[in-house]
Picture 1 (spheres, rainbow, N blue to C red):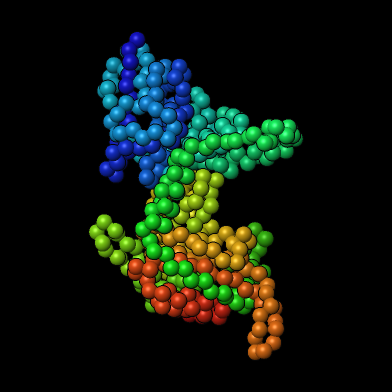
Picture 2: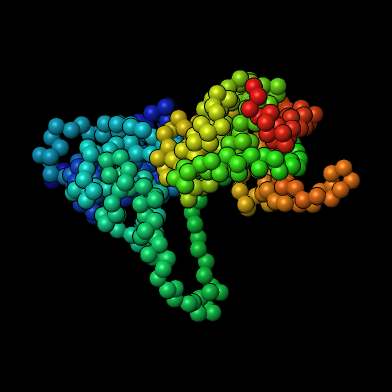
Length: 408
């Protein structure tokens, strides 16, 4: 018998360290070569690593949330010396495939049948965690993704079954003393760090305006009435996104990125629209590239596609990077007004609040109109209050006269 030291491989892009996102093995476990052993979180992806050898786990580098340097020992295996005779001491770098920001794998096996041969299960770290917390055996779950990969949606029937089980009521003492301590790691820690940085570095300027979307809602309902039952219905979001692409050419200072290290503000002609998306793992911002070139239906379909991919951890890495301005919406939970935090390194974010019918005065008469507020934030270092107000007013005009959205 001999020991095999598996060092943390180079995960690319000049990274020098990574955070332990999840261990899939414990000390004493026997693993086969290619079995998943853990996931390491970088600034861009959660990279799942596989065992380079067959053997027993002797030691692990640290706990979940700890950071280790590239090239440092990650796992020590006890192996049959003959099985590693032709391997080098340091593990080769992982074969990076399609990586999704904060939810990707670095190495996958050849296509596998649904029964997960040899116990190797392809899925993301977040799905493994959800299954573990819910008591679901992933070996019993058929994956609908590529190569039999288990997606979060594949757990839904099992989660529903668990939810249907009757809950055991807690005693008054148990209810009063329950405390759950959650270590802030992974995506949640990255979100906390970015939000703190944005709030610390950017002097936010907020601007709230109400929009009469009665005509826009009428148009939306009319277009949806022409769709078949199997076709996806239009929401307000693609209309707002399309209107935004029409007004931004006149306000290039709002469609920009600020590089603080180089002290350079880059204004963009293309509109790479970030769509703030709430996922089970936390907030992500998938991107619709070149939104200014898309039709209403195309934009709606792409917003739906990238948002779904972000929620299911199947988005490609490039689909989660490169936005130049972001729209954020809580839908029916949007409230009356909000104060969205700018998505660094952007300089503007458009917040969509709830749309409701309200009495308003038009030509001296009280009438019922469908009203919606836009709550937007701007980086006051680069967007003056006057320019921010003019941009939102231009957007308001497009949305209140929706025919003008389609005039280029």
